[in-house]
Length: 426
Ligand code: 2PG
Ligand code: MG
Image 1 (spheres, helix red, strand yellow):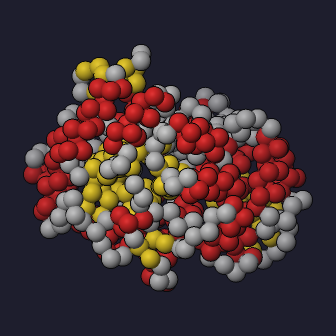
Image 2: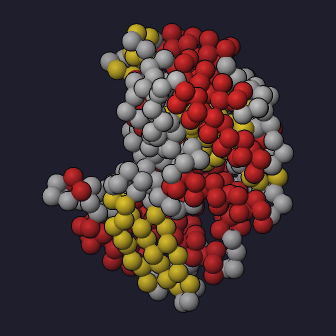
Image 3: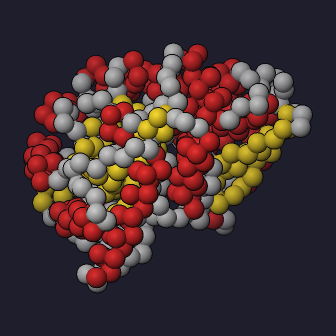
């Protein structure tokens, strides 16, 4: 089947910034996709492009980008077979011709690539997660479907909140439950009890970009203590049923060669020592971006020191890029990778990176961006490739709950396994 028609739209993301929606048609079928956008981005990510016309949306508009590239993209994809995702993505990469998709724009390319997967799944009368599961086989990703362990960012700091907390995300992993629904329910109850705890202590309960609370707290331990008491109040056992995950987004606190944390400068070993103290005191099972994206020695050291107990997750470090992941594998940096489709820009390249991670026992965490839309592609991706974990914010704001709701429906319609913490190799 061929793609008959394509249209791009300038729409709005969860932060009120313009983003791209792509609608494509083939015969009686049509599909829509929308792309997310990050705030704490890795420097080697594929580049989204914008109009840079300060008269509209403070330069973030996309009308001119659409006008310039819509025809070029249609010319490429209309010549290909709809079911050949790899060929279509290859055509888009060639059309762009740059190393980081900065000519056509990773936002334009990804919108097209995801819309193609969605349309192809419809034309083959499959659910999107089934279609992804099928095309993943070409990348030697041969797995069972599974429901991922949610990593719920219930307390926000860093670049996602207007508070002094240095670390960006304080997440809970409700792992000790039989199925996805119960795990999510526990996380939601903890979210509500955290709200009460904060209210009782006269802290604001307004939320940050990913739906978690953003109280005016500057002390990391105090933030973690609030989470612990919310877990206790909810009647769950910390360290048995509920674990903690953090995204430190440390590139954001790496200033002039040192890490600025809670008013003091630290070198990488000083910061690693802080992490070691935190994991002794709290049941932290996952630390994302504990060090700067170029601090390869630090990454190697932390993985050696605590990688047996804790998932060390590369986000800004790997930017979902196969070549950089390869370097990390050779260097012994990290034991887990965050997968964000817009960091690399096509569905095919995302699957290539996941495949390399699987072959090397690197855990995959499928992730949203801090700027999101109602698109739920990542929920299907997580189920289709049997990723152990998904990170998609707090159970608040529709851009986040859309992903959880899609997973709840997949869970209800199918008898897929949920392995909780067992899905994660250490
Ligand atoms: C991250 C993400 C998503 P952003 O750092 O992991 O939580 O944030 O999209 O701002 O990069
Ligand atoms: Mg991150």
